[in-house]
Amino acid sequence: MKILSIILLVISAFLSLKHGWDAFQPANAQQAQMMADLGITKSVMPYFGVFSILIGLMLFFPQTFLLSNILHAVVIVLIMALSLNAGNYKMALFEIPFLAMPLLMIWLKYPFKS
Image 1 (cartoon, helix red, strand yellow):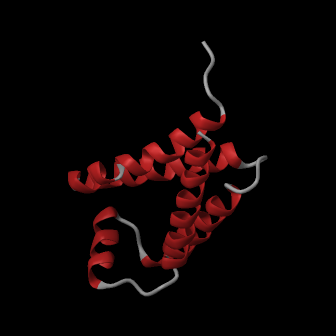
Image 2 (image 1 turned 90 degrees about the vertical axis):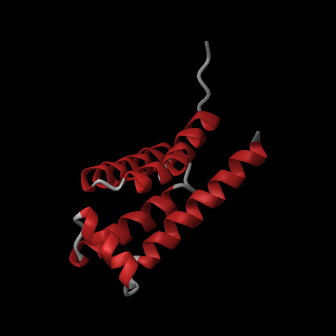
């Protein structure tokens, strides 16, 4: 159980940091088209980048672990909602495993007792 938690933590933090860093890099044509379809402009990308990096770093601190996972899940749901609004069902479905990751991490750290 602890090994799975550590693996998920490392993967989630890596993805958050990578996506945050990538937000500061010039987008290729496919990425620019995807962002335009979602209604995200170039001017807000640095804000998403900083937010993603903060979420990734917050995962490593026990005091902010829960908040970080909740924020991560909210961002993924936002991406899914924007995708569905744009008519891109494939992208929305692609995000489901990434939505499961922070929720699973919360469940592994704070299991529900019945």
